[in-house]
Length: 169
Image (tube, rainbow, N blue to C red; front, top):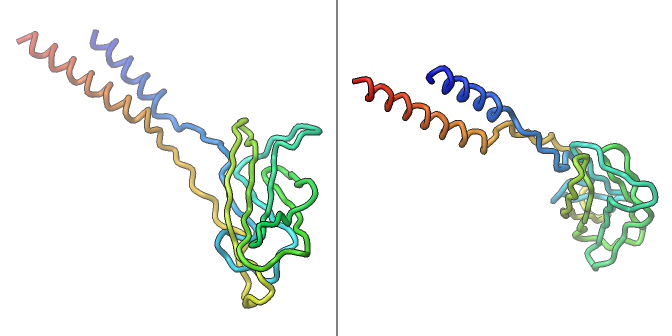
C-alpha cells in the first residue's frame, strides 16, 4: 500500500508541477509605445505579439484601428500581418493629441485577444528620441492549479502515513 501511495504521489507531482503554456497573444512591443509622446505624428503603427497571428485567406480576423484625438479613425488600408506583427498606415490628416490604438487578433492558439492602448503625438513635441520597443514580458512557469493539487496530495499522503503508523501501535 505504501509503495502504491508513493507511486501515485510521485506521478501526480510530476504531471501537475510541469509548467503550463499560455499563448494568448501578449504584446511584446509597439510603435509608438504606450503613453509616450511621438514627434512627428507617425505614418504607421505596429504591435508585435509573442507568437504568430493566425490568418485566413480573404477574411479579416486580425484588425488594428487608430483613432485620433477628435475621434476620427486615421488608420487606412488592410493591416499587414508578418508573423506576430500587425501594422497599419495612418493618414497624414491626423489631429495632434491622444491617439487610441484598438486591436483584435487571433493568436496562434486560436484565442481572440482584443484591447487598446494610447500614445500622444504632435509635430510640436520635443525631438528627443522615443524608444519603440520594450522588453518581453516574462512568462510565468508557475502552475497554480498544480501547486494546489500537490499541496492537497501531500496533506493526504501525510495523513495516510500518520493513520497507518497509529494503527500499528
